[in-house]
Image (tube, rainbow, N blue to C red; front, side, top):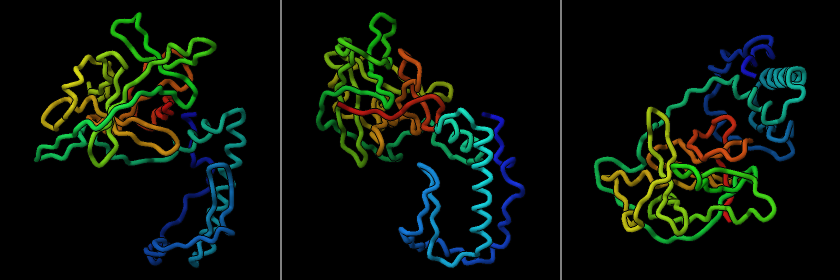
Length: 264
């Protein structure tokens, strides 16, 4: 899959030189007619705008899309939709500016987040794996497993506490225990841990302390994601396929990691 080269699907690169003489604002106020939205695939649509664009650009796009489709049909037999999508995404060059290990608190002044309320919940990832606690291991770890029959009693009950602020921010702890999920950057990698902490110490968290490692921003539309406040861009995740693997921090585009959860 790593050998996939999008250039193999194209006969020649796109010629963008002609576009430089066109009005750069032509795309700023596009209006789309619903009758001119063509469904190419489950997650791919071709939208023809009402702006008078050169026909050669439309034809060029259609030809290249057709070549990519033929290439994937030839090279991608037996692959899942996710694997085919990965082939395409791996061919795209991206320039990403990341704030690694950067706190979300504004610098230069003291900011305090106060605890508002708390509730109990279970967490299940998008692969229907529940979060369980491996009490036999030292230190204690959180893992994801598919529970069947009468084993649902092994699910971890979390206590989720919300905090003030412009974003929804929470702390996650194991019910009836003083163990909280924390995130700390070690050697350019965010590490998830269970730390013992007194609840009173987390009533108010300021940017002048290291307690923000216990805080996570709640994000997501197609599922709930927990982004570390201390290590922006890193999310609580489970193994995509394997059972009884520990929860870890990962970046949103990590392969074979699941970052979306449902709360019950």
